Image (cartoon, rainbow, N blue to C red; front, top):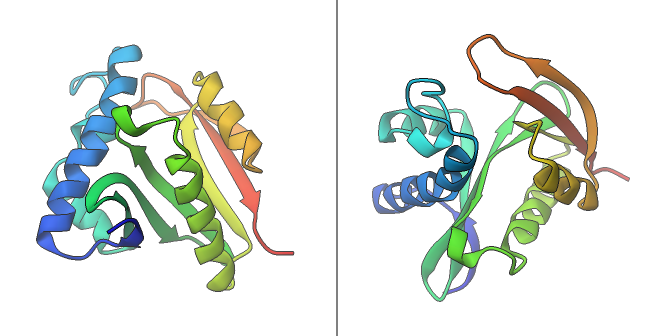
Length: 162
């Protein structure tokens, strides 16, 4: 089975945890993030924290030949805004359009739900990723340095309504 489907079962949540950790591990290594300097980074996410997020967000997995290769969470924010969270594609499955499929899925989901905007936060120094999001219609709305994080966060939005 291939495609995107909702993640609900304990087994799928466990697989999603592995996809998230593995996908974000490359960023953690590149930016020298550790459990000590950034314990909330997705590369270190625990099952408990993921289950907590599941209470307020919907989880979706991207499957290729029955194997989960991607993940994204969608969380309703205020008004017509939805958050795109933890977009992840396994490192050996990148550069095949999987991330774009997940982003377009989120945009379609938000539009169908009556939302107008998809919002995300990312590490500001990741220029290649930021340019990729721009290519998918996202626009930078600002940056913020949080005291508990060893990097600046860039916020981006994409309008999905016409």
